[in-house]
Length: 395
Image: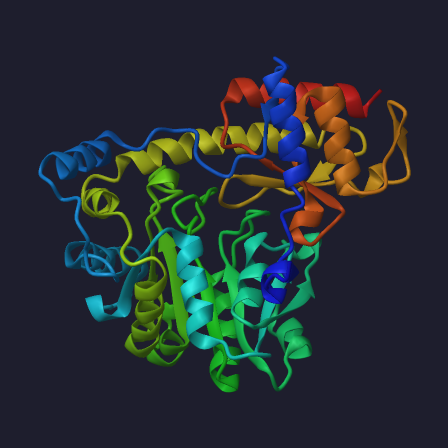
């Protein structure tokens, strides 16, 4: 059987092994606490749900334009003006089936075979594979925890070659919650303009920022960087709409046109029902976001303080999103409960089997010295889960 070389080259998620084991244990009745979930544990706000029901009842269930309905494109434009001081028109907007789909469309639109995309490590698991699917080559910058897992212009200059086509900025970051400051983004923007390099700015977590910090979109500085930037955002995280699958991209109209053409032949339009519901989500009261963020903040602080009280583990306080990267390098080479620990996958297996806690091994994000925990779960689960981890690690 001869299959696609490109398809066969795509790496499966290394978290699948942990996920499969966790599911098997749950099926046996084991009480598993999962810190692996990358979605809010809150329900979609009621006004959005009601609008989805209205769309169904009124028969708004047919095909829409492949690139999205005008009402939602206009709402997205108003959101960018309100939140990011950016002026876009509907021709600059593409509505897709989630943020991941928007990223795929973007790289399919700008990359030619062999073009390189610079990605900071640790990275969101899908970035390298999406680049490869678009015939690009991921080039990695190893970031450091003491620098909040962020790369600098100096790092970018070292990684740049004659084939560099784009860089990815993810702020706030999945998996580590880091945020690029306005000055850091200005320096990167100047570098990108000087070198005529695209920026894909993944801003899905922009509403989930703590300690009084502000989100800045790199596209807002001037028209030159705006024309080189593809902004990625969506409804999944801030509006607890992960299953609704609505993402959107904003970019130069020529880029959006190509992205739209690609989408028209691959998926056609996103769900009509989810699009109409998203209009209400963007246009109406945003109080639900603040309430959700307030609860995430409590969990963030508790998890940060209590992880750092466990011998052998450490973490920095994340500034955004709902993840914490735990440094497990001090556990490597140790044997706990008869299990020799040599990797983040070993630690993840130990915690699943001995503590009944599911975490994500850092190797999936390109850094084997960490595991990732999500605090998008109840405080009750967090308290019990951290207690279990502490009990096993400090045996």
